[in-house]
Length: 333
Ligand code: ADP
Ligand code: MN
Ligand code: MN
Ligand code: MN
Ligand code: MN
Image 1 (cartoon, protein in one colour):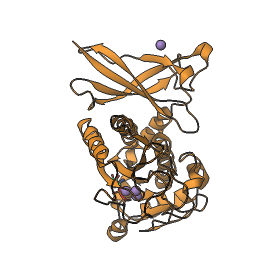
Image 2 (spheres, helix red, strand yellow; image 1 turned 30 degrees about the horizontal axis):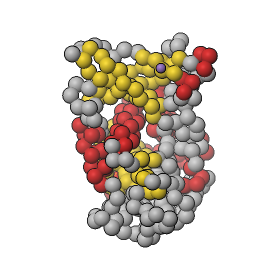
Image 3 (cartoon, protein in one colour; image 1 turned 180 degrees about the horizontal axis):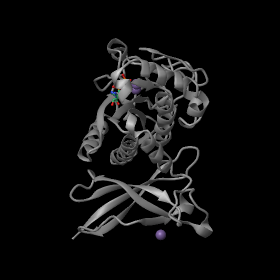
Image 4 (cartoon, helix red, strand yellow; image 1 turned 90 degrees about the horizontal axis):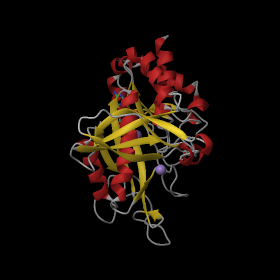
């Protein structure tokens, strides 16, 4: 007998990489082999030397196909077995190892927007719905668009064993969020990429597209982010390390912002619960700050911080690497 392995990888599309996948049928009990693909079709190679290599790095049950079938997240290598330039996971793993003794963990809030017929789900033909106000965490068919997809996606993530910890309807109609974490940087990022793939795949069966566009509708409508919640063991035990982490982020602003997702200037405008992209601030309970210290954290004088800047379309391998590098280097001193 056989099983199906869906090999999933991150391509070279600029400025925001896309997920790709294809199916391998394997004999029962077979190991997951290295595999190849046509890199000239994914912006990862030229036609005259087009082969790229897929190296399985994370496997989970396939909740779409069920049975013994699996989803296989892969790193992309070149044919010399070196990490491909688009392989940002290979840059994260050594940094995660370097600071593993600080026990950094992440919870990432993935916002996204459903589209059908070229407009956000819930937007009327040729116009706009009622202004923002009632949609966030709403209930009822006048406020909520796509819940059947969202529920199915959550069930799929749980069946796959992903560290998904919640979902909510967002501020704009058709806009939603799920949260992954808190787990270590590599796990949070691997699970987030698989959860994104499951989101697209689940919505596909409903004839709906999900997008991570950070500003899906211009004007007075919220953008979509990927708030990145972060702590080390020291931060979970005391307040001074929390301030140290915030200050460290404030000394490294542009490197972070320029790597937090394409089009970040269009989302971090200083309006719609954001801080301007080029002005760093942090504060307790402040949803207009770059970095928020949640109110319970201030009360309890320990916990975690929320970097509110990453875009919905960010690469979590990049974001978590930068946060670990910046904060754990400062905390080590
Ligand atoms: P918000 O109020 O910003 O919408 P959410 O409830 O959506 O907050 O998300 C909070 C996130 O914080 C979750 O992803 C959760 O996993 C994460 N989190 C909770 N505790 C910690 C911690 N100690 N370190 C890092 N992340 C944490
Ligand atoms: Mn072919
Ligand atoms: Mn949230
Ligand atoms: Mn949100
Ligand atoms: Mn948040």
